[in-house]
Image (cartoon, rainbow, N blue to C red; front, side, top):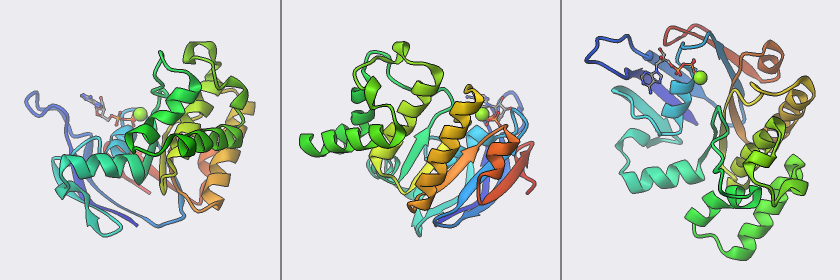
Length: 220
Ligand SMILES: Nc1ncnc2c1ncn2[C@@H]1O[C@H](COP(=O)(O)OP(=O)(O)O)[C@@H](O)[C@H]1O
Ligand SMILES: [Mg+2]
């Protein structure tokens, strides 16, 4: 489903900085629940950004269901990001001025989905994740666990085939961590491909495959 070939990324070539990704090869099959571990700074977030096409690599190839992603035009890329891949960013990336409802609905508005269907999808996602009681709250009124669940509900409503999650349990207590793991497993059982970055060994064990990164490389 996903194929990365010899992906290289460096952020600041002029200062002679070392590469964030130095020749990453990775294949991910449909239905996998891949966990990625590795020390801070080893390139995990950069790899997720390449996968959801926010970050264009300096070189390498990226195929998604046979489509050459790095050759797509901006308009097609937007569609790809919105429809095929859902990204749960490390710090949630919720919009402060919007309620939980509006945050979850936003990607669907970009897709010009009709109002009634948007409403249905938003409430379905909030129910699955168990935060429908917070639907009219603003992010600053939510606990860390609720913010995280809101971010997960947003990708769920998108109904993307692949969900990327960057340390989704990083700021959560044990109970909320278990809840998120349960939700991720459930999404995986319902056919979604999951790629999850984590520091937590127990969370890493929840997947169907784990890879370890070091200094911009996959060590396995
Ligand atoms: N926006 C950026 N500008 C410059 N350097 C960056 C940027 N983002 C990440 N880096 C550098 O790239 C390397 C990998 O970072 P990152 O992918 O965030 O690692 P991880 O998520 O594993 O902690 C680090 O050395 C980091 O300092
Ligand atoms: Mg990171």
